[in-house]
Length: 134
Length: 259
Image 1 (cartoon, each protein chain N blue to C red):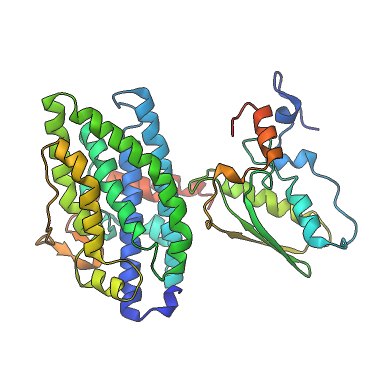
Image 2 (cartoon, rainbow over the protein chains, first blue to last red):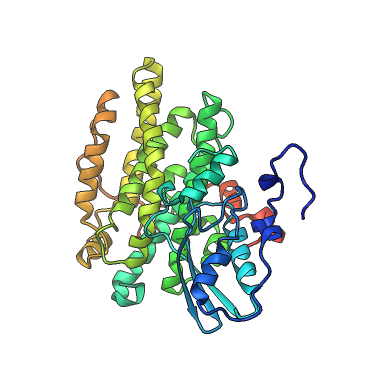
């Protein structure tokens, strides 16, 4: 566990790059439903600035698993999002932590444009907990 | 359709248009950022920071589209001399005052959006997929610029004169640069890539009619290309100031590049 920052709630203070301190252990074998497993893994990748996952933010537009290769269609909240590189790196690292995934291909997509409507109810609760209205 | 699906002539014209839009957005971002501090209110200065960020995000997406044309976007973004920039010439130097910033938001940014809208019903897929997000972000720029334009128009005579002079100095430049009525624009419209240039100019005139009327101005019906027009750069002769291009290229940070 990361060293906590005094005064911050646990879910904020423990928020390391992409939430990687909270990532689950990799699955030892290829799961029966690899696509669902990819979505679950991406659900552990947190936005670098907020304690909410990229799936709950609605940034993942699609996932495809082809053998050991995974394709992720990813958008961002803004065209000049300063965290693009971080998010892509965290997504890639989380998925490559799984021994049954050998390659991750990320496609940036902008259609349809992201809006806050894409945030899930769980994402809204997490954002409210961090003092952010959505 | 992708870039390779168009004829060589259409492809060349489209590449030039994209570069002109990207360069103008890049320079506009710099010119907004010049006013991060020194605006009439702290909040307005902070707004220019957000708009700068958006312009650079849009420029990045537009430069990336040049890959479809066999161009290396990194080379284009970080290595060209000022004389190869295709940005609107009214951005060559910083905005002289806040009235010019407001004119820049309404006239330059507004015309850029109109030019982007021209791709909306066109056949170029890469543009149609990216531009709706840019236009959604631009809606905030438009509201902000028009609110400031109303505020100045309803204020002192001196303020109105400054704003009118700034609008006057930018309007013909950006319209000829970004919504040209030349052969290339006709070629792109004929190929279904963009809408008709005349339609875009008419839409701009309609959008600007009310704010310009408040300044006692009427949008010009016909804006001919200037005598020193350089077709290959879609702008008149001249170039952006060297310090702006140094910032655009990131000259001082080459050892720190992360992209």
